[in-house]
Image (cartoon, rainbow, N blue to C red; front, side, top):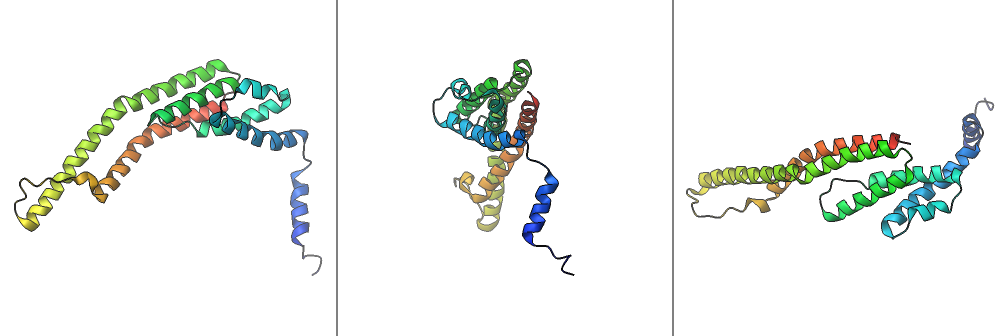
Length: 197
């Protein structure tokens, strides 16, 4: 019976031994991927030159630094809803151009991404404005009917439905649905970028 009972330490040691020997590659990855994440964060927050910062590390470390940087850079690319996001996207794209080797494949994905961003800020913006106005008209009509049913005539009463929580909630739902189409394409492009060496 005592042979079958193992301590937590023994179980942990068995799991560690089953993983195998820690390689030099594992050590480099554990050290430099988080360093790359920190470097990308520093790049966004301060005005640093990535080429200069990467030049401070040997060639082996740079590939792991790039992996860590890529994680942070891709997370920071988003739909260009305002000028701050647009600037952050441009900064992330510039950094990816520094750390990726296959510049042609990267340029192709960035071209596709740019088209989606342009559609989002052009036609997409018009579609969102139209959807907002349609929702406002729909809510106003529903509110007017409900008030007429309760109070009779409501002619001349200004119905500001935009401040209603139900309107705001429905608008957020519609926006999320409309943005979802763009976000799924953006996620696809991010996966393509990740696959580029």
